[in-house]
Length: 116
Image 1 (cartoon, rainbow, N blue to C red):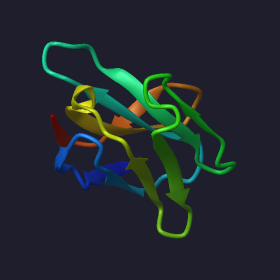
Image 2: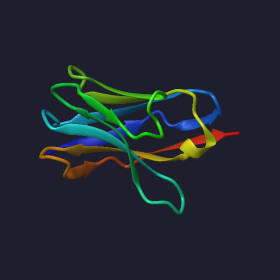
Image 3: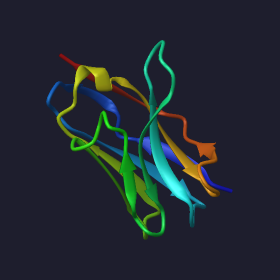
């Protein structure tokens, strides 16, 4: 059983940085990803990483600004967010997929608010 717990959200000014963490107990393979959902908008993929191989992928909107990583020993994933923009404001959710892109496990989410 995989359990995901996010932390690290908060309020930051435009141009600032935040690092989100996702404690991923029980995750030993597959993918870990970050999604976000802003009010009135659909949930969107932000970044993902293969848990074992460490290969990452990003949405175009965050490429060059966000970096996803994982600490295999701590079973924790991270999302380093730099050069934040007001349009990055959303609830950020950590998700895990054991098979393909079937994200069956989700955290509770953490709020990120970027002020202009």
